[in-house]
Image (cartoon, rainbow, N blue to C red; front, side, top):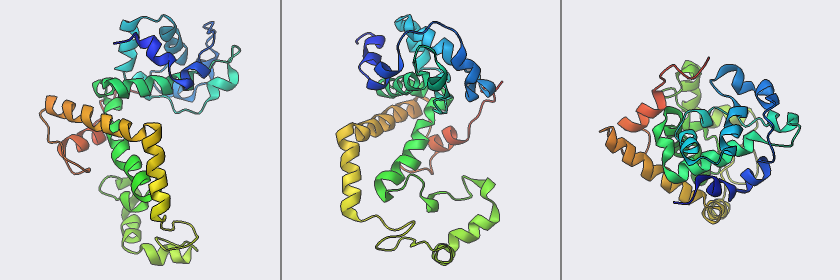
Length: 235
């Protein structure tokens, strides 16, 4: 395998985000995630700059790279023009490519994102598909949401939406030719391959955990990664 730093350097986001860090710590001082999580963007950039495969591997397998909210406050403050948020994006992608994401609790949740937001985008054309957000997995929505789920068209008609209708309007049905164009974009850019890799590496981890692994969200492994929180992430 190529050196991990070299693989990171092939990512345009890494090339744009990594200039010359002088370890001033401004990115950490301004970072909202660092206030709550055990997360320090300065340390991440410092670790990557070592070009040490062992240390970078630890990062790729860690919880740390999944704490960033990608607000890019770091970019606006860095005196050297670094963008730790872009470096994090490159680290996340490499972690997914190599299967290292399954070694952390937050990393394993990439499967949940793929099977919800990812699935909705290539199936319906929306990154948030309302019928997929039920109270079984989002109890915070409360009983009113259950009623809305049973009365979609009436509710959104009153709001002026064209729910699952043809033609223009909010929440309209996306035509199949547009959907195929979206899917082609995912294929050409490597998004579909990324989805396949997430599925394959997650299946391997599920077998390691001796857990049921099927399609969709109603299976043991998905429910485990979706609901598990070891309580060690925040300060």
